[in-house]
Image 1 (spheres, rainbow, N blue to C red):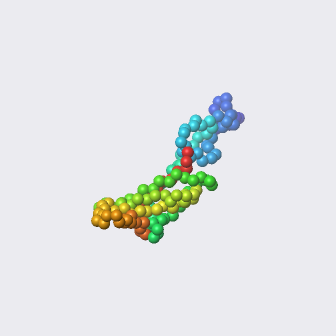
Image 2: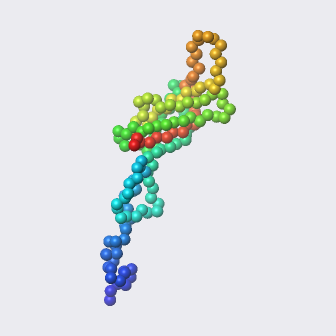
Amino acid sequence: MPDQGASTPGLSAAEIAAIVPQPAQAAPPAVQADSARGDMPRYALENHTHESRLQARRMQLTFNASGEASYTFPKAYDAGVVPIVNATAENAAGASFRYDVTIKQGSTTNTSTTLILTKIPKTLTVSILGAVLNIFTNPAETAWVNIMSRAPS
C-alpha cells in the first residue's frame, strides 16, 4: 500500500521537496547602499539578522593630557578598509564651556581611530590688545562621546 502520510496525490515526497523552498544556507547580506532583487528560491528563518554597515556607540572616553583618546571599533572592518568616522561630544547643561571632538588625521585604520577633545569657553573676554592667548585647551578629562563609523560605499 502506498505511503499516504504527507504526500499529495500525484506527487512523490521527493517531488514536493524539490518545489518547496528550503531555508537559506548562509546569513543574509549586510544592508547595502542599493537594493537588489534576489534570485534564490529560499526562505529566511525568523531570527535571522542583517549586518549593519553603520556602527554607532555612545560612551564615556577618558582623554589623556594631550586631549587624545583611542577608540576601537566594536567590529573590525575588512583589511584595507578605512571607515568614515563621525564623533560628537556631549556638553553638560549650563556648562561654561563647549567640547569639540575631532578625528586625528591619519589615525583611522580598519580597527580603531584616535579622537582629540578640545574644551572651548563659551564666552571670551580679552583685555590685552595684541596678546596671543591660548584659550582652547585639550583637557585630560572624561567626556561622553557619540561615535558613528561606516565603510565607504
